[in-house]
Length: 558
Image (cartoon, rainbow, N blue to C red; front, side, top):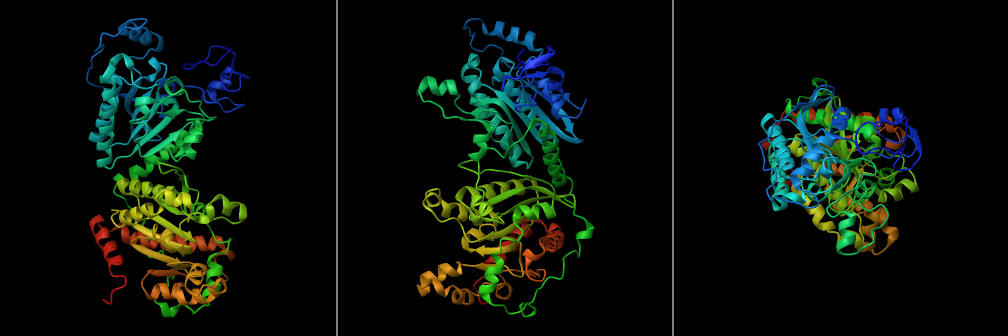
């Protein structure tokens, strides 16, 4: 009464491999082989996965060039060819991957779906050839590629030729990068070795099922070679998410909607990138002349900019966007909670939203590091800005930070390098970039999201080279001089507009954004859509040239 690793259960009741509790077999199948009690995700065969992810009847198999069957004449306890034939009879498959063209909610995709039941999903010549051929077909037809991984690693029976498939498939995905085509990796349990160290981790978006294991060296290899004891949760999807190595962990039932969402975003970018005509002139009454703004006490403005009731980036995502999906991780070291990012739809236009995240109470502020980005946060932002540039998605950044995180770990992790890289990257992005200072614009941590075609600011926002407290401590050597420092820094919207730091100011509701977050969000939305309408008609080369010119002139008399 145990769940099988693939294929439908023939038992009336089955025992979950996760919690070992009994569950009704038919119900288990309807839940896509996910335990209703503990949520354990059992393994699916490739045909089951095709039925789960793709539109019914849409899968059309792709051919591939023939490959050598037994290049080494390999024999272990059985001849390799005998083992291969037995596996084919047992699974009904001829190899460990099924490739074809299909649709997901009507959106075209080239799919490569691996099957762990076929010799552990091992990567050999045939699998490498088929995955490469699928990528080449995606390139030829300008179609996104989705790969479902399940593998124990390279196929040992094919020796170094199996090893070469890692390079072969990796360069095929690089060609899709050069062509601006979306790639998505759905990591299932287990994904190890040569597959993990090639196409599984090279995709634009990597999503793992709960509990899925992924790594280069598996537990048995580690235990057998260096005799290390592995920590709890080692190489699980949840640990990978915390380490910034995957974009998300999604339940099986959520994978199809997520894939459709990503394919829809890619389809907009390849379909002409049209923006609604209603965006024209949709901006609220923006303030373009500094003399139209009232003179305000600088220290009071700082207090308003820091008010915990002001909308955060995730609040704006809820107010502004439909179908927002947060993407995580820098793919190197972690997932900084102070910077959040993801793709959502603004009037059916896919937008890459990136912003600092604070919080509305002490618990939230601590959880999000008070909106102070770490190197991992800036690298996450850079990774997703590159993805937006690759796919042609407009970028909207929301700036609200006291500054980049200052600490030993941040410095050791390359804080200066991460910020510098963002400044260089943003100056060359071939897509429209709109930045909105929604609260505090604190020094380089703010500018790292602020190299944009248009920079807007809310009426009570501030933007400065240093915080008033920091300035008072350094120049006045007196913490009580912070109000005087705030006035001297001229960090309010009126002075920012006078110096051209911001291009326009969005008036706030009476009393500040925290008094009416919903109205504030509507005003920001109108300002962003009106600005994007203008920028969307500009050629990429002109966008880059004008953006560089915008920042080139700062500090000159011209």
